[in-house]
Amino acid sequence: MFKVVEVRMREAGRMHYFNCNQETYPVGECVIVEVDRGEDYGLVMSEPEMILDTEVERPLRNIIRRLTPEDETRIAENSREAKAAMETCTGKIVERKLPMKLIEVEYSFDRSKVIFYFTADGRIDFRELVKDLAARFKARIEMRQIGVRDEARMLGGIGCCGRQLCCATFLKDFDAVNIRMAKEQHLPLNPSKISGLCGRLLCCLRYEFEVYRDLQRNMPKEGTMVATAFGEGRVKDINILKQRVAVELENGNVVQVDAKDVTRPKNKS
Image 1 (spheres, rainbow, N blue to C red):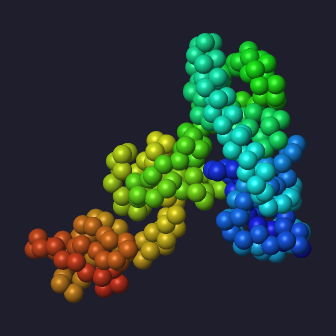
Image 2: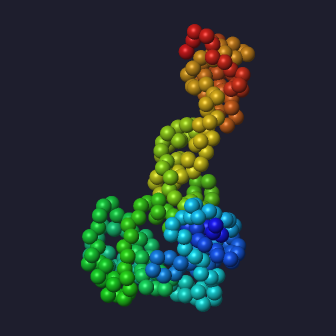
Image 3: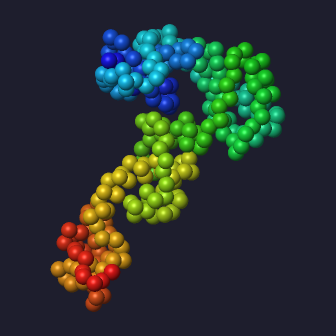
């Protein structure tokens, strides 16, 4: 058994489980954790829980300590250095006329590595750029190409709902989202209405998709003939959440009835 908590790496990074050992770390506490080739910092996002050895996310790394004032000073210094590195790299990209857009720069906690995040339409030959940067910063340089969703995660922002972007707050991974999810939720198929700041379909389309699909199983489809207490007619519209349907009767009137109160008339489709 392991006692673990979920930690979001840096300000808007991915979330991973870390071993607490015998310590207790409350939600919202900043901690130093083990990572590949060194240490990094993150924010505790969950209450401690016990998991079996078979459920361990490999490799399960440890929380080293709580953030100290010295650690906070180092993080602030790294942040200032990262801004300077971004200006330097942007200048080098322009100088070498590389078709790429620099999004973010991060120093590793121990400053042994500098990570440059960028977007581009295709593969970029940045070998000469890496040489320039390595000579300037005297550290290991990592160029990491990301997608538009990762760009939104890093830059953050406010979604159409008025809240901070899900990808920048709690989402661990980007699940597949397709247009069928919008159709089954009867949302307007207007790209400006169902797309996020990244230009892709809203991640939240997936949140309630299963619920909508389950609720819709007990409802007649649009265009089908049904029998109601007011007579027979054709379904013009359905309200999945209210479980009501709009039925156009044979006399032309439209009535609103509960889905449970309509039946399929015999010998009609």
